[in-house]
Length: 242
Image 1 (cartoon, rainbow, N blue to C red):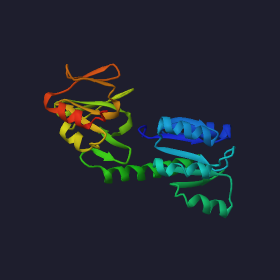
Image 2 (cartoon, rainbow, N blue to C red):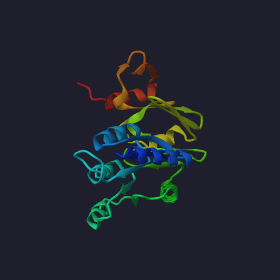
Image 3 (cartoon, rainbow, N blue to C red):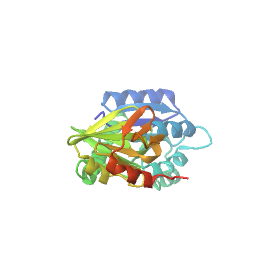
Image 4 (cartoon, rainbow, N blue to C red):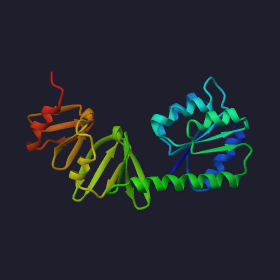
């Protein structure tokens, strides 16, 4: 189950270390722990976890409930953990629709069974939404590699190159390979954001740094990408020329 990455927001260090050990023992990915909402927001934007465990009573001006309100737009599932047995706190927390709610102290088997149920639900949701090997949401899509679903954000794509019936999706740090044609790939993308510039290439318009119309080349960082003759006029029309 290592394809799922968990992030922890907890200001009790000894408890946080215990949870981290269990998460790793169960085979899930653990991408870190912070003790405040401010640090949590920064880390989540960078690492995009699949699940967040949030202590309601974290220190600082923003508590766990207020932090969780930011997850709605990011579409990140979360579990509340708390020492409070107050019904008002529970009602306030439940209004944000956490995927689970755990009251401390809970034993390790309780956490294990909760995580297993959470990820069964997430996997079921993914299977229902999958279409031709893809899953889409507002800012990303998933590609399947054996039994692992890799999430790719549209904003992270630098270019896409076809290789026969496969597409190589290049981001800043990794290359992802999926069995789909470039034509099918283009249908999954927003045509106002992405453009096909060659029989083998799709690029995000915002990544284009400069274009050499004489040599029929465009540049994304140090990457030189050819422009096909039949795609040149379409590319020029889509640019915001002054």
